[in-house]
Length: 285
Image 1 (spheres, helix red, strand yellow):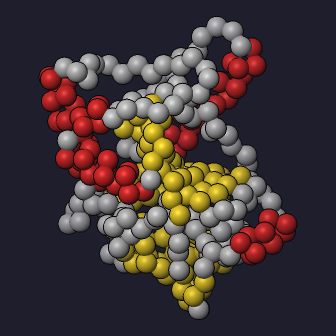
Image 2 (image 1 turned 60 degrees about the horizontal axis):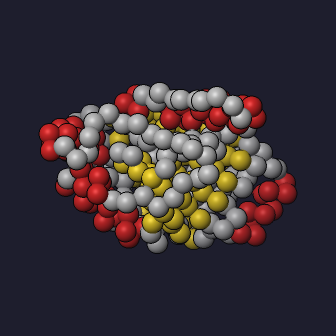
Image 3 (image 1 turned 90 degrees about the horizontal axis):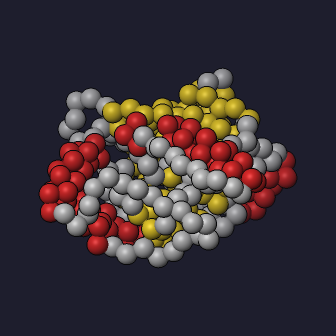
């Protein structure tokens, strides 16, 4: 049986049970296709009243949540100054995947140096639901499969959590995806816990003036150029700011040749963590 994302079934699930959740996933990936060992990091899926969600590293979630609480309190007072000292090196991921269940829209946020890219996607999943069932974390789960980004994927979902969502960009099954892996087991997502709770990271991008909204195709070009020469990001222009007087300070002078060379060296070393991408081909419009 093949299914596509159903707006009608979505609205039924909202009326039945509008809940906010935080699901924590263990994510393991092979940085190179022939790597003998996995890298690992925890991720959070924040589900808001069965309407929207954010998927991001758990470390970034904690940072962004703390920042949002402090900033909202600061805005109430409207006086003084406020600064944040983020330790981005604690996580290998600074990106966020945002989903809007109503219009089936996926936004991908990624920060490169002082620029925040926001990529608007329409991602279509054609799921084939299998009759095979099991139990995972005390939830009854059912098997499903799809193709995405040039890979074949297997998911295990539960209708006991009536949210059509899952890790990364995956969504559209009639229940929450608890386990997900590609056919080569190079990428494995496994839910560790889920709780009914409300979380807010809406102020995560405060202080970032260089916000660039772009298409999936243009982002793919930026990312390919970045992987070849990370300092290529210095020449791109910003597009907006948000009314508050904000600034972001990053050590170094992008115009200095030595700084560029050191930046390229460090970033190319860091990018070895992702030489084997989740998406082999661009899967979203």
